[in-house]
Length: 232
Length: 168
Image 1 (cartoon, rainbow over the protein chains, first blue to last red):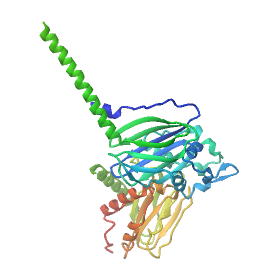
Image 2 (cartoon, chains in turn purple, brown; image 1 turned 60 degrees about the vertical axis):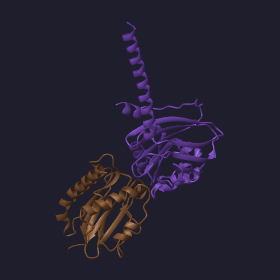
Image 3 (tube, each protein chain N blue to C red; image 1 turned 120 degrees about the vertical axis):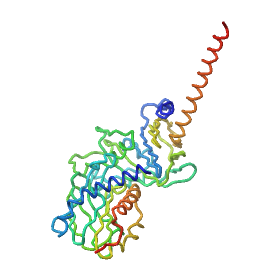
Image 4 (cartoon, one colour; image 1 turned 30 degrees about the vertical axis):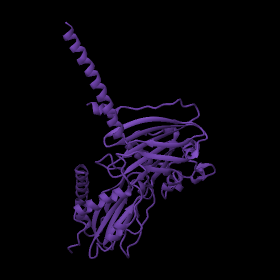
C-alpha cells in the first residue's frame, strides 16, 4: 500500500517560471523491450526549442499545406531531434520519429499518458479539413521510438542550442506500472540537459524514504509508550 | 510475457473469427475480403491506427478491399515485402482500394502516414512458393513502432499456421 502510494506520488520541482517562457510537455513510456518519448508544445515553440527551421513544414502562402503530410511526417520529427544527444544510462541511442502532427491550439488534446500521446500523434483529420491554419495557431505533437528498454536506467536528453527564452518542461514518466510527474524550468541562455530517472527507481526511493519515516515514527511512539509505562 | 501472449492469441482469434465467414465468399475470388482501416482496434481500445484484421490468408486470385472506415488512412505495399512478380500498390488517403492478389507469397503493407506508429499488416496469399519471400520480408528494416508490430504479426501468423508451406 505504502509502495503504491509512493509510486503514485507526484513530484513537483518548480522553480519560478517567468511569463513568456516556452512550455513543452513530455510523456515517456518505458516498456520491457523499448522506450517511447513524446513531446507537445505550441508548434513555433517546439521548433524554437530544438533550433529547427520551420520551413520544413509544408506551407503555401503562409498557411500549412496539409497535402504535404500525406507521405508521412517522421522526417519532420527526425529533423527536430537531429542535434539532440539522447542516451539511456551512458549509451547513446538513436530515437526514430514515429509521427509528427499539428492540431489547432484552440482544441488542445490531452497529453499526460502514453495513450493520450499516441492518439495525439496518430489522429490526422487535416487532410479532410477545409480550414487553413498558420503554424503559429497550431500545437505540435511528436513521438519517438527507441529500440531499447529504459525501465531501470535514466533517459538523458542534451539539446545543442542555447535557449533564447525560458523553457518550462512538464514531464510525465510511465514505466513498469509506475508513474511520476515533474516540472522543470530552464532559464534563457542555458542549454537543456535533461536526466529522467526511471520512475521505478524514484518510486523505490520514495518507498524506502516513507518506510524509514514510518519506522522512526513507530520507534518514537514505542519509546513514548515505554516511557509512559515505566514512569508510573 | 504471458499477458502479451494472451493478447496476441486474442487478436489472432478475433482475426481468424473475422476471416472465417469471409472465406467461403472469398473462395471464387469474386467477392472481396474486406480489411478495415481504423483509428482504433474494435475490441482492444489501447491499439490505435490499425488494419483489421491485421493478418489475413487468401487464395491466389483473391480480391481484397481496403476499406477507409475511418479517415486519415491508406494502404500501400512495403518495399521489399511483396513476392517477385507481384505488383506494388499505394492507395489514396481516405479512399477505399481494391487489390487482386494473384501471386502466392507474403505481402507486408502499411498506412503511409502511420507506418511509424505501427499501422502495418500482413496478407499471406496461399499457393505454391508462398514462403519464397518470407525471409526477405522478415529482413526488411521497419521504422519506429512498426518493428514491434511486425514482431507480433510474425508470431500471430505462425500461431495461425500461415507460415507453413501450402498443402495444395
